[in-house]
Length: 246
Image (tube, rainbow, N blue to C red; front, top):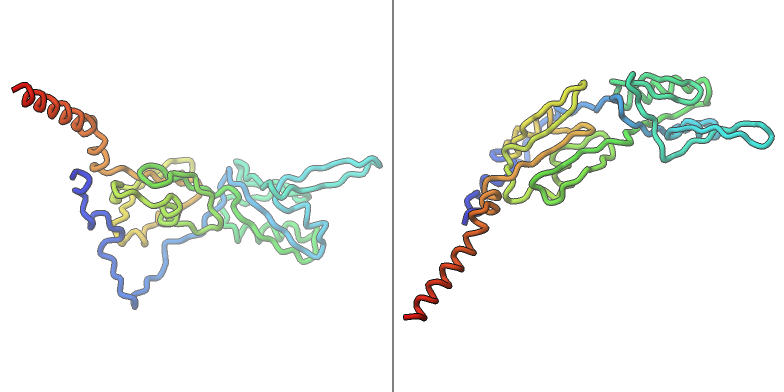
């Protein structure tokens, strides 16, 4: 009875949304994420010099010496380029390249210019190797979600976590985000159709989503409700014993 108090309407997402199929709204709240210190970047370089391209691809380059004294450089495709506190990555041959606060597209263009003297007609693609979002609280499957690509929304994250449970508070979902060395706490109302227009609809790397449990869940898990069936059972046994003894 207690858990049934929350009505169907209260559990609905995007209440009041105009679902007319002719309606279309321009997306104005998405901006490509910018590279921050601590990010790990996956770099892919292709050119007409395939051997030369290999030393730039996806990260840490190690130098090994052969028996004849010659040295060779190899790159591990499993590694990535770590952005240091100054917003720089260390590339072979060109060394420090400042990519902090740039979008992936702009950073790729910058890197292409830096390596062009060493390669013929290089093509550069760049991606985040450590874009992740954490979801915890009253969801089906709390998890740390690894994100492929740049565009990832709060609805994507909650879907990956198996959606909210029936008892979750949809009007007070907490988003925790680190911006410029500061931590911001933002309340998200999933029942509002304005969610799609929110500047926080699209997530950033290392965002944390906490889904608060509703009052109905706490009511069902309270000590009183847990003990009540035991008390009723004992009382029933006492009444039965009284009736038998008469």
